[in-house]
Amino acid sequence: MNQRKIYILIIAILLGSLIIIEGRSFNVVNDIILRDSKSDVFKEIKVLKEENQNLRDELNELEKTLSRLSDQDLAVKTIQDEIDKYNKLSGDYAVYGPGISISIGGKITSPWMVDLINELFHAGAQAVSINGIRITNESSGFDTLPKGQIYLDGTILSPPYVFNGIGEAITLKNALNASGGIFDRIKATFGGISITLEQKDVLEMK
Image (cartoon, rainbow, N blue to C red; front, top):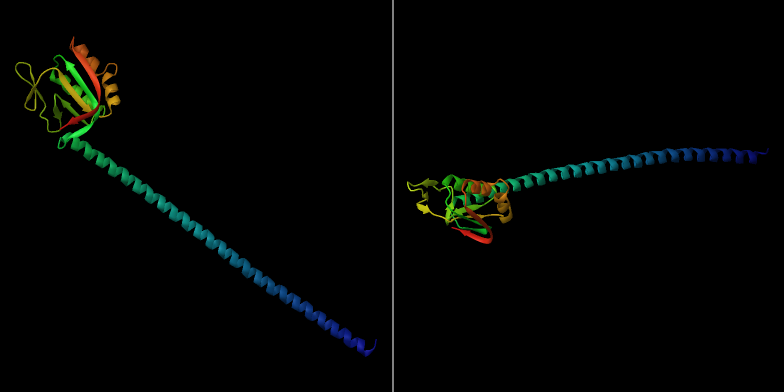
């Protein structure tokens, strides 16, 4: 082998070594870049997970807030309903609405009047009157006079006794007409008494 071929071989070997070294260096650098890229991706995934968790936490807080607001609204409505109920019982202002009118022909005693009024309120009546006298929390109650007349808030009541109840007419009617209910008991106690019930689209109590 002449001297020129030896030089070419040495140069080829050196070039090959350089290429191998550069290739290895490139792989190392590429590995580093890939590791950094993967690291960045993992960081991004972690951030997304954290953001998703934060969103879930915020959503949970919003749901809790909504629940509290709903509970508060319910509480406010309940209190307002109680206030309205008290105002209607107080008789401080006129009440209008659908309901029923009951006419009892014949004499009954005051305890039965009280029972009938209580039945109306228990069935959901918002306001009740008898012979035009509204029953409120200021009512003094029924008294029986020496001759058997029934006295209420300065007025002597005489038959027919007309009870008006403002509320859901069907509900009130069904409660009073129930088998063994107040109407059946009154009829069983007072023979020959008549009871009529009418549904009214609008009743007024002052």
